[in-house]
Image: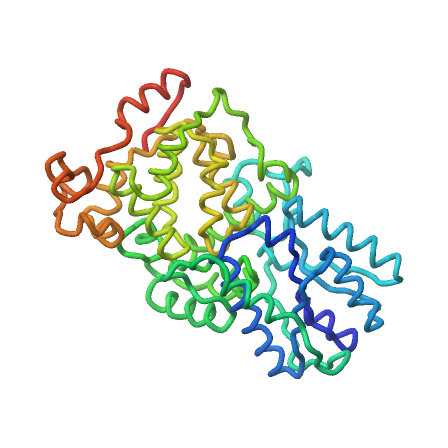
Length: 436
């Protein structure tokens, strides 16, 4: 995007804070990550001879972008394409507003490694199943993104509203103490460190909860601190890269599902066959890491502590909420977005639907037994001890389901539901299942 704009003449880089987007994604972790990313971007642009102008929209995002383009006499606005319903409507409105001012909007790929619509079934329709999508995705020629070596600016540096963003972060609720820092500089360094020690073993270790062997690039990809195209090009020929790139393909897959069915951010892709329960006490116990299932509580406490949760833990806690407690996946997705640094709509909502049985999983009644998952993917209990400190002195295998006397002595709660009974009730209403 920046290279295309720079090749056409002087550029005027801006980022406009959208009050509606900030309201929709009211996560202190997310806002703090964004603030750091913007400051880092500004530093990078200054090294090229440019500067980022951060503006706070006073009326609407579209009005602010249009006004700034008119003020400097711009003939074109360049931006990255985005695919949620909110983002698509916003870009369509901007395009009409710019056209009325004799300015052209250019949308560039970059959010995905393989942009939505680039691969499709033999009949020309979007893929609804991941495996055939992945075959086509793997055949797509992903090109390396181009960055300009220097920039010519459209006007001298001028005051902006970045202080308003920083003030909003300072006034917000406390962020997670262990959250990652935003920005391209940190993202590149972190990915380089991880790849040196973890890429070759990713296929064997990415489900190891205690091993903490995942790349943790989700937030950096979401905010554009890392280019997914560059990640694919950089790693596709390295040993062990295939399982890692498959995860990037899942990211693109969910983006193309959302691009063609924007309603699935809020509605079931595969309609549910029974009504969800409303149980605020059970939901609060799950959200606060007090479910009485150590592996579930460890995952939810990691989320609050780091603004991140291991992918295997995400599946376990999501299955527990939607299958054991029969609580709506939308409530779970909203709780995740309250804490996640990325809070990506496509990835969060469609992964929740996959686990809940309302999404793209070919087996909608898949069940993750929390104790069995704990024994399998945290066999020594180190992940649990890391986040559930009251169980720090409990050894395996007891830590996966501590006896009542141990729970009472350590102040750890009894399970809020009996897994076997909850799943028996679930199976009584639905047929077809596979235990995880």
